[in-house]
Image (cartoon, rainbow, N blue to C red):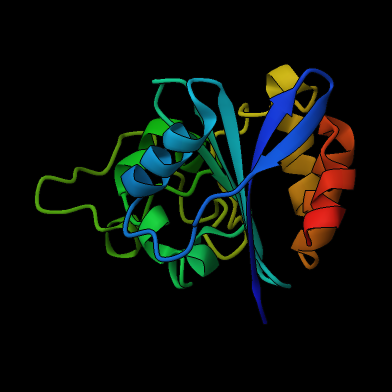
Length: 185
């Protein structure tokens, strides 16, 4: 299985790609710095994909904090790009783990809660969704201004959970980068 990585930049109603070495990133901060160097203050959208396993979107808007979404966080964390997805604060801040009921038993072990980690009062009960059942994580609203709201993103990812490339293609079609994605692949 192979990896695919691309840096896309919106250009009006279309998208362009920028060359960037996205391999060997040691952290999300490294990836964000690379994007900022290549997009000169505009929006950059990084697409990362592990064939047949997962995809991730990392959006960088100027100097704002990066927004991240990944279709299968456990798989992405155990991949070559794992260091990009290693910071548990990214997932807690995005709120998706809590929204999906994923903060709960096993969260500390799976995401490195550390010595000062405290289980939130709103933890899902034992009957709530488990990480293996709802593996996506991140900011569901990162494509909202581009026409794909959070519920739509979630529905696409869950409908095509067994085919992340198809899900990424569906997002590309809705947002407008599908032709460029197909050319780059």
